[in-house]
Each structure stands twice: as C-alpha cells, then as structure tokens.
Image (cartoon, rainbow, N blue to C red; front, top):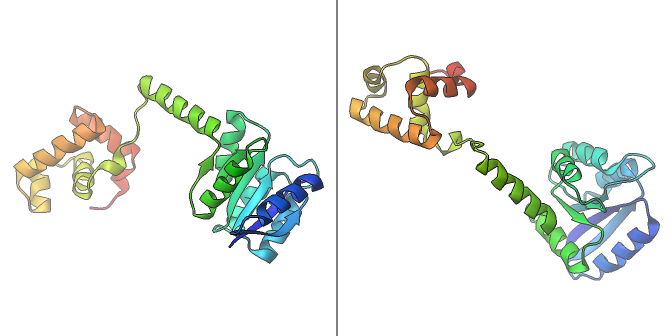
Length: 218
C-alpha cells in the first residue's frame, strides 16, 4: 500500500484527488495540507511514501521551498510535483529542489497513477512533453560539440595512470610504480586518451588538474 500525502491550497482539488487515489487498490491518502509549512508538519507526523505537492501555493510556504526542506528531513520520501506550468524553467527548478517527478494538473488520471507508482519505486518521472524537451536540448548540446564528461568511464587503472601522468611521471616510472610493463602503461594511456578524446600529454595533464587529481595521493 502506497501512503500518500496531498499538499494543495485548493480544497476541491484535494477532495477530487483523495476520491481518485483511495479508489486505487494499492493507494491510500493518509493526510492533507493546504500549504508548505503544514505539509512539512504532516509529513513528519505521517511519514508518507509519496507526497503530491502543488507547485504554486500563495499562502504559506510554496511547493519548491517545502520540497527542498522535506528532502533534507525525509530523504527517503518521494515527492511528485503537481503543476499547471509547462515550461523548462519550472522543470529545472523542480529537479534542483529534489523532487522525484513532475506532472501537469491537466494530465489524465491514469498518467497520475503511473507517476505515483513510478516515484514510489524510487524512479524519476517527468511528463512526456518535458522529457521530450530535455532530450532535444541534450541532442542540441551534443551537436554543438559539448563534451559529456567521460571520467567515470575510465577504469581504476586508467585513473591511476592518469594521476601519475598529471604528476609528471614518465611511462617507465609509472611502470615501475605499478609493477607493470611500459607497454601496458602505454596501452592504458592510449585507451584513456581515446575515451577522453584527448591527443597529447599536456591535454591529459590539464584535464587531470581540472578533475583535482593532483590532490589525490599515490
């Protein structure tokens, strides 16, 4: 059973949502609040699985501020933002606040149910138009040549060798430090340069400095 807390300044909206969600076999509305501060208090008392939070509430604390505070106090509770705003600014602010998802108030009932199930399982949810726009923006950045950080794609050995290179070690010295052959060092170096799309040793050093690898003890 998914325990739900509704936070919305419109009593009619809360009533409608309560009727809809309580009709689901795996959901139960355990509490309601009309603004952010009350929502925070109710969440602490009831410990719901999912909070459905209105974004814009003119009285008391707004949805984004309440979400930010709740994620600090109840990090395991998922928060689904309910909003009438369908633009990128609000989507990014919702993500930054720590919400698990965002859905439009105009969304069909079955989409709301699916979103609640999704965030209750620890997954993220964005309404389809928002997902489409974020993907389009990502593709535009890729076409403009923005490099996606591939540092986490490096193996532990490649990161280790990159650190030695940044600290000025020659290939032979790296081989001696790691008890491997010079050829193996060169192979790892070639692979990490390919992953990072870098062509020279100075570029590797510059990249390593940006990553703070000079502060990493070896």
